[in-house]
Amino acid sequence: LSSRASAILSALDIPTNQEVPGVYDGTWGGTGDILESVCPTTGEVLARVQSASPQELQTALDKTREAYEIIRSVPAPRRGELLRQIREALAAKRDELGALVSLEMGKIRTEGIGEVQEFVDIADYAVGLSRMMNGRVVASERPGHSILEIPNPLGVVGVLSAFNFPVAVYGWNLALSLAAGNATIWKPSNTTPLCSVAVTKIIANVLESNGLPGAVAGLVTGGRDVGEAVVESSSVDMVSFTGSENVGRQVGKVVQARFGKVLLELGGNNAAIVMPDADLELAVPAVFFGAVGTAGQRCTSTRRLYLHRSIAPEFLSRLQALYASLRPGDPLESSTLLGPVHSRAAVGIYSSAVNRLRNAGAEILCGGSAFSETDLVGELQGGNFVRPTIAVPKSVDVKDEIWKTETFAPILTVGVFDKLEEAIAWNNGVPQGLSSSLWTRDVRNVGKWIGPAGSDCGIVNVNVGTSGAEIGAAFGGNKSTGWGRESGGDAWKQYVRWSACTVNFSDEAPLAQGVNFTP
Ligand code: NAD
Image (cartoon, rainbow, N blue to C red; front, side):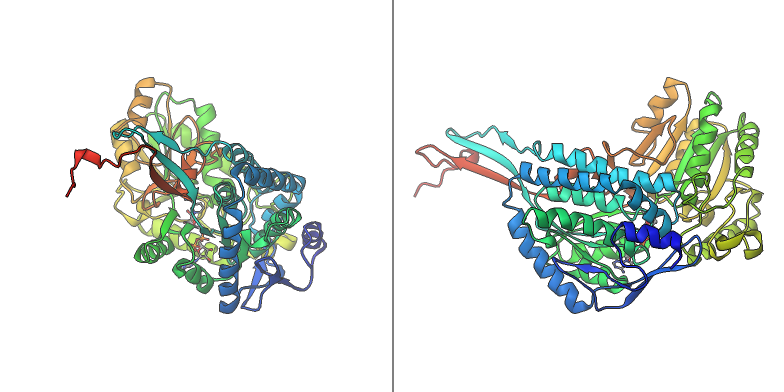
C-alpha cells in the first residue's frame, strides 16, 4: 500500500495490506464476497473488504432487532446523550475521516472534511431533537377523554447509501433514527466500504462504552445481493434508500409490496436560471461550483443552465474563463479543485453523454473528452479524470434524453430563454425534482419562483446555487427524485410510529359522533 493511503487507514484503525472485516453486528466479521476498494485518483487497490454472506446478513438482522428492543426503552434524552458522544468522537477524527472520503470516493479534501462536518452538525441537531420530539394532546369531543398522539420508535431502519456521500447520508439517517429510538442496519455503496467501516468503528466504540449492543448501529457491506436482501426483509421496518432512480424504483416497489415504509432520495437533474438583473459576480462562481464541484457527482450538482438571452454571451465567457483554470489533481492536495470521477464506469457514462450531445448537434464550448494517460502526470495516470464540459444544444426540448436524464458527471447543458415563465417550464419539465436555483434581484421574480406556479423541486433557492444544502431544512426532492425528506425540518417524523391514543378517565363510555348502541 502507498504511504499516502497507509497513513490515512492507520489513523482510523483500519488494517493495511490485509483483508478488512466489513460486517459489524456487535462483533466484526465478513465471509461473503470480497469488495475491492479502489482509489479513483490513482487506481490503487486500497483494501479488500470482506462483505456479508447471506447467513451473516440474517444474523445481523436478528441482532439488530434484539438491539432495537433495548434502545427503544432508553429515554430519548439519553439517546441524545449517545448522539452527543458520537458527535464528539466524529469531530475528534474529522480530518482523518475527511481524508479517507477523499482517498476512497475522490472528492477534494475540504469537501471530504465537510461531509464529516455534516454528520457532526446533524448529530448536534439530533441531540436537541431528542428533547423535542413531542407528540400532541388533541381536544376530544367526549367528556373525560383525552387524545394523545405519541411518536413511538419505529423498529429497524435499513439505510442503503450511494457512493457520492459515503459518510453524510448515513449520518443524516443514523442521527434521526437513533434519536427516535430505532436500531439501524447500514448497507453502504459497494465501492466505498472503507468509509463505512471507519464510521461504524467510531460509533461502535461509543455504544459499547455505554454498555449498549453494537447492533444498535450495524453494518453489512456488500453488493446488489446484500442490498436486495435488506430491502426484502420483513424485519426491516423502514428502508431509507439513497441512490439512482433505476434502483430506487425497484426498491420502492419491493418495500411497498410488503407494506414496509420507504424513504427514497434519488437522482437530481438540477437547473440554475439566470435573469438579466442577476448579480453575475455571484452567479458565475456559484454555477461553476455547482457544475464542477465534486466532479459533478452530487445529487444536487448543476446540470442545466438556463440563461436569459441578454446576458448569455457574457455569462458564458466568464464561466469558460473559470473552466479554463481547472487542472486535474490529487483531491488530497489543498490546491486541487478538480478531482477524479469515482469509477472507470463513470468515465464511460461521461463519454457516452458527451457523444450523445455531439450527435444531437450541440456545440461543445469546453471539455468534451476524458483525460488520457499521457495528459496526466505520475500517479494520476491511473485515475479517472474527465474534462468538465459545457454544451449548448441547438434548442431546448426537455423531453429529449439530453435534457431529461441525470448524467452523473461534470457536464453542464445550456439553454437560452426570453421569459422567466419559459425557463420555469423547462426547470419543471423533467422527471426529476430535487434542486433548483434562480438568480435575480427582482422580488417579483422571487415571488413567482417560490410560489404555486414556480419551481416544483424540493429545494428552491434564490441567489444560492443548486448544491451545498445545510442540515437545518428538510432535504429531498419530488417526482422521480422520490419525495423523501431527510435531515432537518419535519424529517424526523418519518422515523417514528405514530400512536393515536384515546384515554377515557371518566365513569362513562360514550361512543364518538353520539352513536347510541344501548341494547
Ligand atoms: P446506485 O443506485 O447504483 O446505488 C445505491 C445503493 O444501492 C448502493 O448501496 C448499491 O450497492 C445499492 N444497490 C444497487 N442495486 C441494488 C438493488 N437492486 N437493491 C438494493 N440495493 C441496491 O447509486 P450510486 O451510483 O451509488 O449513487 C449515485 C446516485 O445516487 C445518483 O443518481 C444520485 O443523484 C443519487 N443520490 C441522491 C441523493 C439524494 O439525496 N437525492 C444523494 C446522493 C446520491
